[in-house]
Image 1 (cartoon, helix red, strand yellow):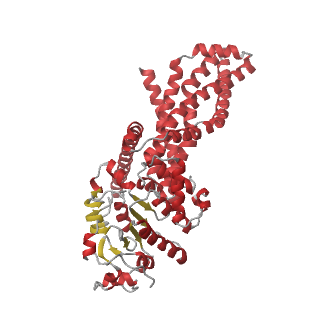
Image 2 (cartoon, rainbow over the protein chains, first blue to last red; image 1 turned 180 degrees about the vertical axis):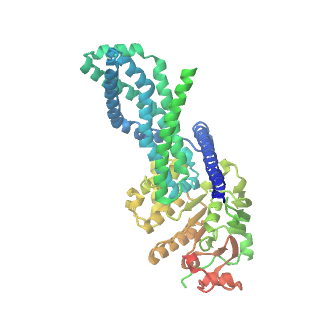
Image 3 (cartoon, each protein chain N blue to C red; image 1 turned 60 degrees about the vertical axis):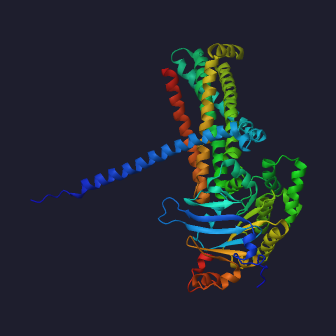
Length: 279
Length: 275
């Protein structure tokens, strides 16, 4: 009797595992490379900020203000709408959940802590990643493909100093400010819903919230948003600077920048919480 | 052929040229990109004299764009040296490179104008970045350069996307010369333009050399344009220099490959590579 088993199958399986291992190793290597490039880029931004004037490459304050307007001020309407909606949603969910324990009034505590420590930095980070991170990646990618970055270099204008550093500083200032704005609007929206549902006055809601929150809680949220700001700008810049493949490449770079930024924000948020709660 | 008179005496080894200052000196330049089995540039040697128009010609894949990127210090070679104004830009400290770049201008193939800025802001950018002058002075400087390249002052307020191909090339030239450089690099200045506009750009390059005494390096694949403007021509072929000389010298060359490339002999040359 002959053996009908295909002797090739184990070989194919080993080949398959080998190929997948190579792909995985390449992904890891590329990830480590990008991490290294990102760190170098961040260090370069700090270098130009601190020592640019000694290299005839001063970081221009008006450019920082222009970027602050673009990243922060022009984002206020959408940030307000989002924060208001989240405030209402959290209050609705909180009251509905706490009602089962007969503890509806504790919604103030739940909303205050979750908003200031989690939701505001996270939502504002995602908003800025989608709005400004994508714009930065698309801008740099387009400039790269149309040789505008080469033109800057040939004019002795360092692109990182001229384009990236002002955006980084502006995002570092505006994202925490947007987060603080979001804290206020979300809590106000929550107060509005709580007044409507439980009859708790705004004053009582405010006093209770201020009693719960301390500077640490607020700094926790603002500190996280500062980290998110760095992540957004560095990821967008890396994707924009290393673009290839014409208009399609610009689209890919922009999408990749937004997806990676959001993923980085969420993972960093988790690690941050882990670090803070463990210590 | 309506050819511009060659550089005085024309011959690179003539006594005149020996006394001329060498603005660019390239020695044994080798560039190999990662992953490529062969070097893109294989030991390039040539020099450019002060005040001449040197045209670098070659087909697709000949390495002329790679050579230009090396000359304007955008990339580093694997080996060899490039001396601009006597300084080796391969091993130059950043501050010296900064000073050097202020003495040179580059007009890129597609213009490379900043699309988020008006033409006026494009011209003002290097002035604002590098000169400590009053805004009015800088505006006067940019207007002078715009009029030098025969562009109307109304162009200042236009966005680069509103300009025609020829106007864009002129605006790019205006930006390249706005800092009064001693050395100008032009990448395919007349590519993609109709013959009349192309001829006007050629005339403009000659005018820049004559009026401002600039040393100009032009990278092009357009034979008509090259023959018109060149004082000397460097022919690149597959990463190597085939011949350097005046048009007369090239035409008298016994190298069949040079002749084929000059004439565009379809039997011996991949003409498509020149288009």
